[in-house]
Image (tube, rainbow, N blue to C red; front, side):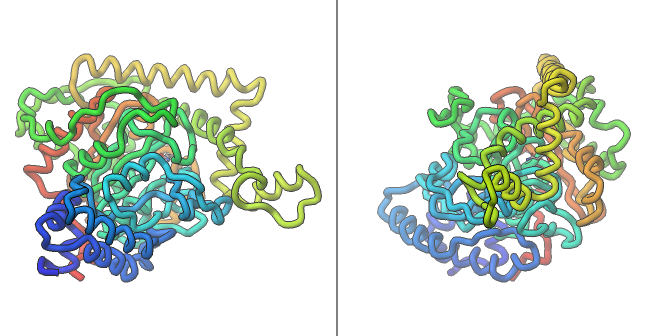
Length: 495
Ligand code: GLN
């Protein structure tokens, strides 16, 4: 290795790492060894990885080194090591979904996103920790234990893609994929000081991404820069015959429009996102970021999303309802955990599910089943769906006047491990700024824009349907004139 030190390399973007490979400054194998060493050294403090696939990664590194050398492979992510949230199916590798229920589940097939990254020559380092079945906002609901925030080990990294965020923030992967049902890539990215994008619902195939709430679930890249997100999104987006909800909408060249000037960009600030409950320091950092956009030529006006305050109530009916149906397949027969010595079929179902699922998952199954049951369907589920439509209409109206919306990702910075674990309602309320976007199905990015008490603060930039290109352009322009996205937690750098 002729360039920089290990620590320096782990803070580079995927684009920069690929360039080092192309320039022959480093081989894919050296890069993979570097990340594997860092995982060994640092992950015991973080608990980000559930499975590390050393042998597979090394075998893939040899193959990719050869293909790059022979000119057979020139994809911009070729050779760059990454991690997958442990709900993406990976043939021959454990896919646990952070649950005891699937703690013995080896997938017989690959998720489409994994397949696409394999074809690109990206190198999988391992599968990362998450809230069980993606239910949570703190990564404390994992069968494999809580994950620590690399900026402060006593705090949560966010959830449910907490392992994906912590791994990238600490330099234990160049980028990762997470999933976002109600905020799970944006919120942990915000708490860990990295960038993420939740694309429009349908932009990325969900084939092989274990379902939580199917009308909301979307895969999302988590990375060090908007430029990296453009490359990853480009690689994994597009229609897939194996996912009937994937959209048959052309995928533009996201990298081509990153540098478009922001002159005349119309930014809307939803006033509901700055009401009571938003931490004053977080608000200050967000407002400073908005000022930066003005300096880049944007205009700013206040807008209203009048129904957004209903999003927590609507989401926490719709998501559990869909989850209760999706999780019925885990019955002790077809997948995963099966109880010992069942006395009959009913006993097999009941005890397998009782033993296999954790408390939060059980809570959601009960809420969801209740909301869908006859007599309550109209009162809860149907009503929540009607509210969902109102929330969607709010966004459609807002985008008649502005190009993007900006606001906080979360009301506060990362909280202490254990602080909210006994209070599900307080935990759910923290999702207030991410849920409306999920319910509407519009895309949004989260980018780091500063610190409050040494903890990262994320800005959420929300776009119109299928306009991810604009979001990446806006985020990239900000990252060209600021360096918040280049900050790394000192405890994990330089070694
Ligand atoms: N915190 C939300 C929930 O618990 C969102 C999770 C997610 O996006 N997967 O449902």
